[in-house]
Each structure stands twice: as structure tokens, then as C-alpha cells.
Amino acid sequence: AQSVTQLGSHVSVSEGALVLLRCNYSSSVPPYLFWYVQYPNQGLQLLLKYTTGATLVKGINGFEAEFKKSETSFHLTKPSAHMSDAAEYFCAVSDQGGRRALTFGSGTRLQVQP
Amino acid sequence: GAGVSQSPSNKVTEKGKDVELRCDPISGHTALYWYRQSLGQGLEFLIYFQGNSAPDKSGLPSDRFSAERTGGSVSTLTIQRTQQEDSAVYLCASSPYGAQSTEAFFGQGTRLTVV
Image (tube, rainbow over all chains, first blue to last red; front, top):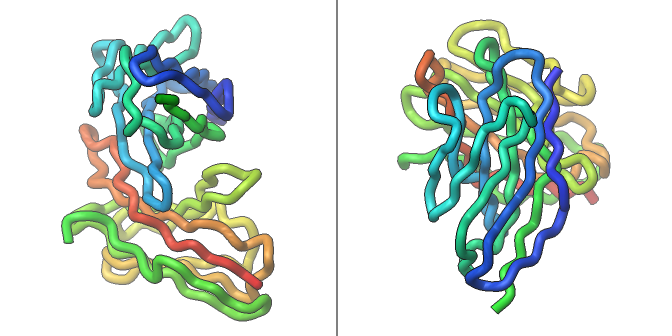
């Protein structure tokens, strides 16, 4: 069974500050890991994904995440927050075989203060 | 269109009525997923279709929920005898699948309100 834990249901940062959204996963098989973003009244948009290879993954809008197997973590970062980054962020895991359905974390709502 | 299309975008129904939610995946995508997003439950997997294989229904919460996928393309999620706890946003996603295809593309969702 797989699971995802996102620490902090709400995170507030100032514009220009570092963004750090935490994600820890549990998986009995090598995982695929994803970060999705959801803007109000919209569907989910993929920010970035880790499948194999390089453990530091760069995504859209300046976000990146690092897969750390020893820590079972996949934290999302962005050096400098913009107002437009305010949204809900979901970390997700799927297995490498089978149906590859996503197991999501509970989400982190990011607020960016001017 | 180029993306996953879901209809209706909003649906209000009376308790006990049946509803049908439609998903039109990206052309050529063989994998299709339904998820439910509700307060307190987060995002839950409901059902998975892959090509012509039997669907994986392991996430359906009760026998009031069913889904079909016709011709390997459009999918319909049906909820019979709706209950208030069925109120949620129902999201559909599709994926090209395959060894290098790991990403699911989501539609905008259908917001279902049961009154």
C-alpha cells in the first residue's frame, strides 16, 4: 500500500520568500512521485514528476523537488514566491506497474502575502 | 479540444435521484481514471480503465456507483440514489500509459451538490 503525508495544511509566505512544501511518502515498491497544483475552481495541473534518474527535478513556474530515498521525501521548493503561486498543492505517488493510479496527500494551501 | 473535457461542470440534484457525469479523455489516451475530491476526504481514487481490460473498481465507495467506458474513449460515471455525502468534485484524468508515460492529465471536474 502507498501513502503520502503532506505536513502543513496551510503555508503562508511573503512575496519573494522561499517556498517549501513538505511531502513524505510510503511505498513498498519504487515510486513515481508527482506534485500537482490546483487553482480555485480548476482541475489539477502537473508541476513536476520524478520517475527515474536525476533526483532533483525541475518543473514549471520555477518549482523544483528533490527525491530523497533515505528520507522517503519529495519536498517542493521555489526560491522566490510570487503572488500568482497562491493555490493548493498536492503531492502524489503511484507505483511503476499496474494501474498507476495516484495516491494523493491531503494538500497544502499556499498563501503569498504582499 | 486538446484537454480532458468533463460535463456538466456543475450539477445540483435532489437526494435519491440518479446522476450521470461524463468524461471525454484526450484522444489516444488508453488509461482513464475517476477521482473524487471532497472536504475531509481529500482526493480519492474511484475507478480505472485501461484499454479493453476489465476496469479496476476497487475505489468505488458503494454499489450505487458505477462507470463505463464506451469504445475505449468517453466514460460515464453514474451515481444512483444520490446521498448528501456524495457531494464532491468528481475529477477525470487520462494518460497515454506505456513505459514512458507516467503523467495523468486532469479535467476541470464536475461539482456535484446533493440537496
